[in-house]
Length: 357
Image (cartoon, rainbow, N blue to C red; front, side, top):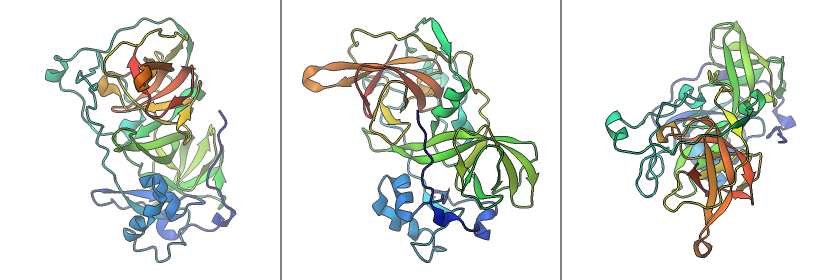
């Protein structure tokens, strides 16, 4: 899938303000720090934060240090509100009220490292609900490191560690380039370099369910300063820029059980409530096709684990339930998951429903 680096403008070639290079102070409850990227405007940031660019005055109001709405610079830190990431009604339950409890704890994903909320089903509750249906599928291919890392995930919050400058004032930095991050870190420490693309809102409830995080590569700390550190980028699949973030390495990178199975078309869709809803695709599209990544609103708290397969279907009303395709889980956080669309009979849409196989 073709990847492009977004928001690059020549006007960003200037020194980063000194206040942005220091470690961020803790934000008050209800707020988090957004790091301005090259090409950003307040309206563009509002589009990422609220899904509505016209709400930029709300960001300006919370940042009195910005005296001119047209003058924000890469590396600046802005205070933005944390929208309620309340799960859709029935999170961990189907619409019919049957909870989907895991038969075994799923592996922790990147989200746990950057503040994914708690809320797993208690032992007492787990005894009262059925497991997801058990399946035995012959694996035909193990997910490659490149595929796993490019899939990304949905996280509850923005990370705290960010790139605030490049060593030689370049807009873009790639493999073997150096960058400056906003905290003192131990030399030799390694991190995953990610980009917070936009907030994702549930298509049925309108609730914010988190930030779509794109994985760019890795970084290794080479020098530690009093307030900042220098990192060297490694294995970058896309160039990083000021405003991108660092998170702890995912210990489950390329899971043994995370294998893609053969295409199996389910001929009929069982009646009853669905086991999840597609909330976003890798690119900012409302539709996706075979071999693209999709994100949905169930995770380990609902029994979803890497390697799990789901049927994608759509309730068309008069025509009934229509089979759209299949997907397989690559990453599973507590309340969201990343999957690869393995089969698409027609274009998959945000809001399409899932049935565990």
